[in-house]
Image (cartoon, rainbow, N blue to C red):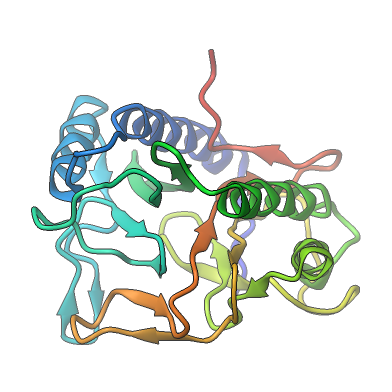
Length: 255
């Protein structure tokens, strides 16, 4: 069932989204050559505590697997769900996607950014840039009267134009009291398909593109998802509210 948020829910979703955005912004500002993902995880934990929020990913369960990080830190060919580690240290030329999902006053804000580290190859910079543009295209399509498929198609078109792989097994999703709600929001599809978009829906739109083929696999830790061909991936995400006019991005830092 797709949850339509009440006016009270929306007020709380706005605050939850802002908190998640501020936490991600603070962690991103610390990304540099030589820092480990374990250190970034510690910084995330400290920021979450400062904002009096909780992590939606820490101890998240998938079957008998429990995620140990306060956020996901995915480097280069890791698409999503990278586990923080002292042994994973950022090097010049890397890209890292940081996925922060936090709960504040009973509601979740979910956002992701991919950050170049040091001197990054132009092809990878372009991948990150186009993934961000695809996210914006998906957001622009999130208006009442459209369907989930319109968002999916808008995202896919950006990948197709540049020859990027679209990860199909991983999708965006509804967000609210839970991190993952209905509907699923794929990054590929056809216009005017899927559930209709209605005012009061809150969804996370999150394109995931690769420089090579789109095939992925899960490593032995049960969480880390990589590209099969070792190609670099980019991932970006915002939580948005569908209004009676333009979509409202909830995970933006308000200056």
